[in-house]
View 1 (cartoon, rainbow, N blue to C red):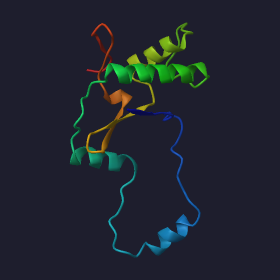
View 2: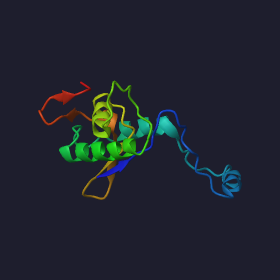
View 3: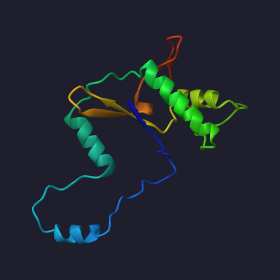
View 4: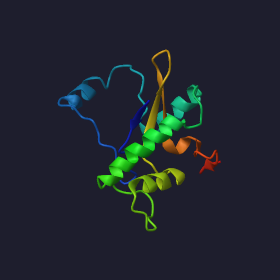
Length: 137
């Protein structure tokens, strides 16, 4: 599993522009190529086209890695996504962020055929170690 992070709500996505990209776009504008959909529309289209194959439940391994990674970020002064009520331990803060579904990570689950599915932490159902459902439905 891979965890992609640093998708904060406040920050707009950075455009990836290479030198000469504008010239290429102008030259290819007249060709009959399929129109590429960007952003949220593309994500919606992909989710409609093929339903997800993997479980909607977060595994204990994913949970452990997410909490550890996020706690490390918090300990290195990353912005906290929840209101603090006296918590100072980075792991406790990370657990609170997970309960409130505020961790800005994406989990990439690889399938046997080499393809993968990306799940946002806020999309997965999380159960804590006492089998009590955390957040969500």
